[in-house]
Image (spheres, rainbow, N blue to C red):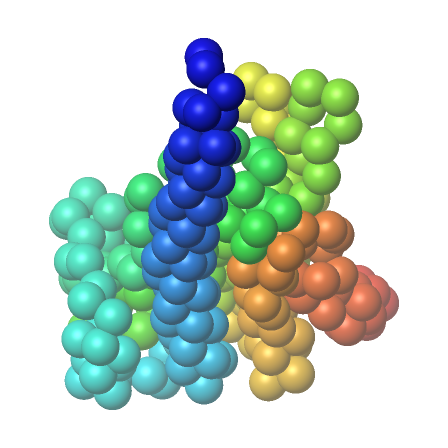
Length: 232
């Protein structure tokens, strides 16, 4: 390369770096905007279902939120396992965002952590009989293992014996800590509120969610659980 060509090469290199940076930033901004919108959608659904009550809320009362979030009608096989006439599901975010977060762990540091949230509603004779909210996200990475939580709250019109179940599941290099809450028919309003007190804001935060307490007020629910265990 001649001496005269050096300045042109430097200018070209600078322009290439600026262009690459601009393209990368635009791609991130678009993906982050989509992710943020999906998080807001999931949180708005969560807020709406906190006011719903199994055995009381009707299908007609639930239709506005089902329509607003383009709920999918589930097959009869899904509804049949709860002796329901019909069931609906809403899932967030888009599969593209979820796949990117699963494939590239570093995206959590720019607000694109791997996560999903979903709501299921089942109706029997036009009345809500089962309501479920689930969410999953990664929290940390230890060596080659990725750790996260799978959280689930289910309210049922049937009287259930279990109130809380914990455990874990290994899927390749991903370990999920599982916390499943089942609210029985005699659940109090406070118990229902605490069991659905999810905060999804950390899934779009730089660095993502770090621990369970960022996602839900688990201490309040544990107090409810302890009080119920003391009941005869």
